Image (tube, rainbow over all chains, first blue to last red; front, side, top):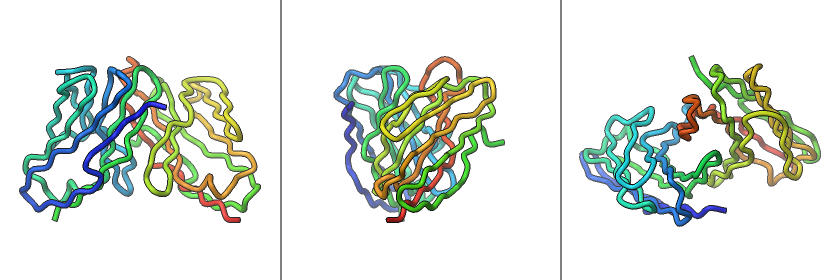
Length: 110
Length: 111
């Protein structure tokens, strides 16, 4: 099974704060993804990437930036966090087809 | 409208009963996948099943692409099957992995 790790696992910040969520995969997958999961909405794609230096916009990108620094590392940045960004965030990676998910990061914006 | 619809929204079973979860999608581009989310939140892939039937253990996935539907059958359910089941499609048709998820089916299996 592919290994995808996320940090931190839990984060609390205040409105207007800066938050960086980290994701690392160790299986040399080309594609990486950031999702958020909210009750009543399922999982929604924020940003994704085809490789180092590449960034593609997902379905709910507003308020988020992302950066893919290496094949392994994909970061999600919230520069001015708002309470509406309180959510469970998942990172995933894939070669083709099956996506492998990290354990998730719970973010609370007060 | 919603591009991936799952039914039922929730399901309660007694251990040993079978379950049939449905997924209907509005796009012809599928690359359909089924996922399971543990009660604690962990997501795992069950099937990558763009068409046809696949089996693993007590699980069977059948996708009929031209009818825009897929099903997940769980036989002889166990309490450890409890959790949320999602189907998702790659509606771009280019295998980008840009998935659109349904809202999930919450399954509870009682002993």
